[in-house]
Length: 418
Image 1 (cartoon, rainbow, N blue to C red):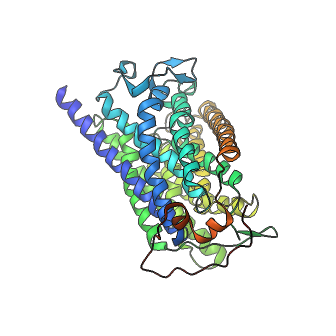
Image 2: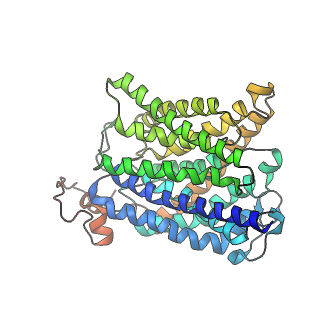
Image 3: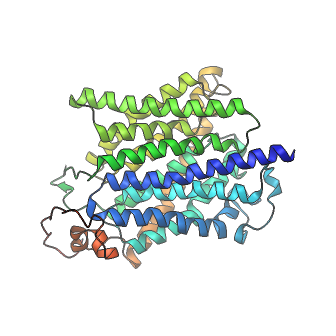
């Protein structure tokens, strides 16, 4: 028993390191897909997402998420994550479980920074990061993973298509809407492209995220007691990512006569997000279908958000994490080999998935909207037009992220407020 516990603990801690490394992936994707003058600011936001999130999740959020249940909604408040949490029935030490859950919490928070990049006050963003890690994310986490009402209904989200990615995606969409578009993004209702400064950094970030996902999904087993299942999860994860990349590449190639590099990169991430809910429950063939369709979805949702909703999301955070998180969670109800509509003809699991998706969307949209509005009316959410034009590196942090390179000067916008 001690040997098995040691193996399980080592596996979870290795997976934790892989998921932690995903923070670097997010930072590279967001930096590469935006302009050089904001690179230091984006790095700081991603860095502090994890730093602030680690402290507040340990202090408050973990108890809210995993302590004994209160009416199916939240766990009992338990400051500093004290106690053994024996009701969870873990085969690993509680501190190993806390750090594993901490890196998941940080992932949900950092999704939002990309959608709000290049025009958000650093201090205001820190307040948001604090609250999502303390309350918004833990509440949904308790519903699904902490023994709450959705867990009782049989809602299936193995590694977080909804708990992590949809929460981050919905909050990102709300934040980008409240914040407003970057200067010059829309003119007379028409969307103007604002290219990122380094597709190379973006690609590096995607490779890191793909690598880290081998901790994100397989690590959620919390055990090596069933190596067949762990191997299956590795395969479904990889196949869905690959199919997502192929799907996004194919549809952009067909639509624009050339394969789009940025969309193909996001297609891989879309496939990863899409498979995360059912990675343990679907066949390899279904994983390919889910990934391929996720790659198509990310292309069309990105266009819809940008050109129809006129919401400026520089990295496509909602399309990748929100839309594909919803889609992947729905597909569990269709493709799960046990309980899925395709295998049983029973709609019960699919109906439960719809209920969980809807409840998560309602909670996250409403709580995020209130939070962003309060921040905006008190501290202010957005930097001035002058600060945005000069770049947040210089104005927020007093640095130039690319000091040895000449950054193209932009025409100063003739206004001082947004």
